[in-house]
Amino acid sequence: MKIGIVGLGLIGGSLGLELRSRSYEVFGVSRSEETCQVALECGVADRASTELALLASTEAIFICTPLGAIIPTVQQLIPSLMPETILTDVGSVKTPIVEAITPLWSNFIGGHPMAGTAQQGIHAAQRDLFAGAPYILTPTEATPTEATQKLAEIVKSLGSTVYFCSPQHHDRAVAWISHLPVFTSASLIAACCHETDSTVLKLAQKLASSGFRDTSRVGGGNPELGVMMGRYNRQALLRSLFQYRQSLDQMIEYIEEENWLALRQILETTKAARSQFL
Ligand code: NAP
Image 1 (cartoon, rainbow, N blue to C red):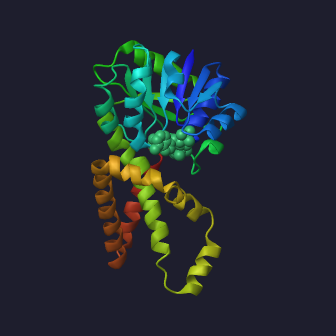
Image 2 (cartoon, rainbow, N blue to C red; image 1 turned 90 degrees about the horizontal axis):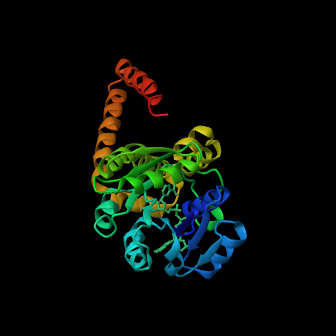
């Protein structure tokens, strides 16, 4: 089966490596000749080009560009496609993408692999990125079942676990567990930077260890991704952020009041609840 990938960065490049290892024939499209060359040398694609026309004979295409470029890329791609070609994207927000592309291409299914690293670009591509990770597909009532089944088979072959849901439910769920953590983690780093005593700040920087590494990781990632989350998932993200602020205010209140019993109860509840997410 011939599979196309547009945007040979972390996710697109990793998909290429993985799909080729599963005997799919991968056709990659990049904006730069240099990336096409790297893609061929690193085994990300069997064929690579800067022209979307390369994908004319492919049966399924993954759009792996940043969120803001997904819809324009599909608009440019459509004239080159066979009518039965399945289109999907990997963007971390689904509602605006699915609403814009579904009327343009009936065989479109929104997708989102819950996998990534803090790196970007083709050199960040790696094997096994999707193994064991959830991969969400958001077909609509109008999506042909056969297209959804074919795409689900490809995704399962990556070693991912497929989940189906509506684009709206996807966006609200990822606002909690993926987008909110980026902003709370970034706020943590920003708050620490407000220490005015340079001796204390330098000492804190030297002492930072595994706890700080865990809690600051997603706040220290690709800034462009965070901006896209805020821009394209604004409503759901704000809802989560407002709730987070409320939870934080509650803890501040208990500490100010020296209400150690109430504080303990909250921390007992969060300790027990964490295992339901992980
Ligand atoms: P990335 O490493 O920066 O790769 C994106 C690639 O898209 C770039 O390498 C570039 O490839 C191409 N591109 C960049 N700007 C473009 C533009 N204006 N127009 C067309 N193509 C452009 O980023 P990524 O992490 O792989 O993210 C790609 C998509 O995956 C995003 O939609 C993101 O929401 C989603 N996603 C990311 C993660 C994560 O943790 N990183 C996880 C799940 C989903 P060429 O140089 O080959 O053109």
